Each structure stands twice: as structure tokens, then as C-alpha cells.
Picture (cartoon, one colour):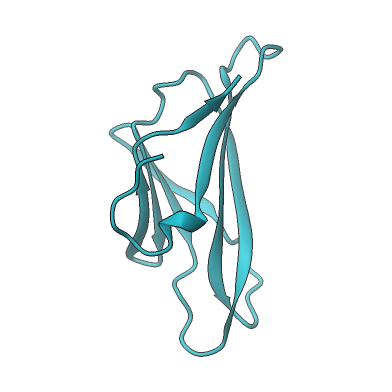
Length: 107
């Protein structure tokens, strides 16, 4: 996993698990991390915002002002092949907090 110099990149992991029993997909991509959220946050915490030029763009809530707590988040989706995404970008609000160009593959 290679990351640019961004906030909390060490708190993110991503991997693809090979699925030999699904003929339509290579496997499942997982993105796991920790984010700061406000004391009263009920909305979905990680969503797929976009997909452009082979990049998966994920959105988490903007960093709260004041009291906050850490929360684990998990995103997953089936992938058709290993080169489906050239990068994974994670935004907290409008701030890019992590960018990864390599994804570990578990077979």
C-alpha cells in the first residue's frame, strides 16, 4: 500500500479478496478505516461518491469541530478484475485525506 502524505493514512487498509466461486467477478474490494465523527452522527459514514478515470472516490463525513469520537468504517464492492481501479481516493467533506495506488490481493 503506497500513500501520499495525507492525514491519517496509516488508519486505512484496502484489499481485494479473490472469490473462486463467482464467475462474474474477480473478488471483493474492501476499504477499512477510522474516521472522526461528531457526537451525534446518524448518516451513512462511507459512501461511493464517484468513479472517474479508473479511480474509486469514497466520501466520509467532514471532520467535526469540537467534540468527536473515532468510528470504524468499512466499504466493500465486487470487482470484475484487478485493474478495475488505478487508485482509491478518500475525502472527508471536501478535504482529500487519503490516496492509495496499490491494493493488496488475497488469494
